[in-house]
Amino acid sequence: MGPVIATESLTKKYKEKIVVDQLDLRVPGGSIYGFLGPNGAGKSTTLKMLLGLVKPTAGNITILGKEVTPKNRLGILSSTGSLIESPAYYGHLSGKENLQIICTLKNVPETEIPRVLQIVRMKDQQNKKVSQYSLGMKQRLGLAAALLGNPKILLLDEPTNGLDPAGIQEMRELISSLPRTFGITVLISSHLLSEIDQMATHVGIINQGELVFQDSLSVLHEHSRSRLLLRTSDDQRAFSYLKHSGLPAEWKNGSLSLRTLEDNRIMQAVSLLVNSGIGILRLEEQQMSLEDIFLHLTGKQVSL
Image (cartoon, rainbow, N blue to C red; front, side, top):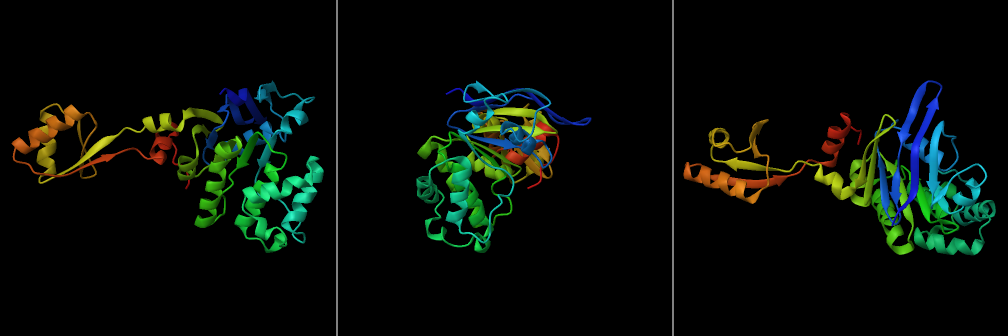
């Protein structure tokens, strides 16, 4: 399926500061697209431009095959749901009453409410006052509000921010179910690499307003330079033998590794060491973590 969200040279400047710089997003239909970057990278500004909350300085936005203009913006965005920053509610009203107000604002029938409450698993809490909700329940209510009107696209800005581990797990499961169960394409921004790794099918990495990577999650993981860690009866002597034989051995922080996972090279290394009287204690494949890949692509450590 082609992209349901596409931008061409999308740019946002505040005075002389470029916050988003020539962004070319491609969000495939039916995907969970993880929009990844450190705090202040330009993620929220990009989502706000997609939703028409912030006017781009330059560039174009296409949603569901139509270029967004001031005239057709509302029509196109009626197929889009969003949860941007912390959702605001009337605390003295129940969850259901808050959704009734949103139905009126969105011109959506109230018959939608039981459906979205079922999706976010909040039917039992719908008559409770929102002031008594936990942060996780408030986030789920925000997701329910975003799902009113049966949108084709959902834009979520840091939806797990501030949640405890149980709340993060629950939100992750909810988001992961949306494309396969309801055919919704999800664009989710986060600075939590581990979250994106467990949810996304596609990834875009933004750093200081620039897109430094965009492809499927599997391609991102191919950037991880796999290596084989070796524990032997004499690691330093093993390193000398391997290097002398032209094998891609590496000695780093007191650990011996091979920068290859090719079977014939591994067999060659093991045979060489065993024939040299060095015992093999352990062989362990190690891949670069998503955090390491991010650091490699951006030159910047990301907060977790």
